[in-house]
Length: 236
Image 1 (cartoon, rainbow, N blue to C red):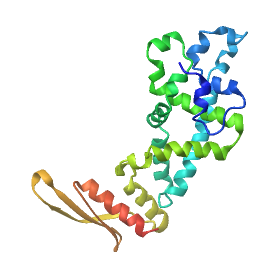
Image 2: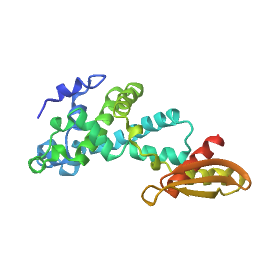
Image 3: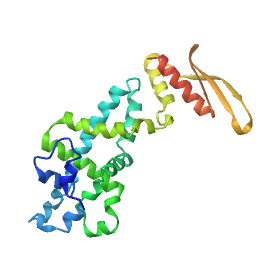
């Protein structure tokens, strides 16, 4: 186990209240094995990183939402929500925690240690959120903390790892057309070419008689999604 002071070197602003940093690194399994942390068993949960995790989750949400909002101005609310969900998923936070060896700084109980708790995705993701929460309470410097979060976001290329199909252009287009014109999109003029093992599909999309876009792909669904994306760009 490494000392918390070493972790501080990876944080933009050193902790003023060192106890907050230690609490952010303290898993509930360690707390329950050390009842001396509280004279009253009822308050044992307060000495783990769970409350800091709750706070850090909100701060991460705010920072990532702001980033997505300004970085992807062409996306509708539904698409942004899906991207946010992926961006701060357990999988992503686990990767970020590993990048700073966060598991090596954690205080975990003996049982959790024996079962490989320092490497568990859920524990590391929660600890990363707790670290963000502790930084906020210690400095109250939202700008610096946001920059710290965005550094991980950009270096990890999270947005580029999202498959195009993650964004449901068809649903987004349908919602937009209904809101603007009270119309549904029409997919017409399907074309199919190529051998059976390598088909190529094309389709046009309309709103009534108005041509909105064209799409192509290796399946009808992929072609429709591409057409919907082009239509959304035309309706900006």
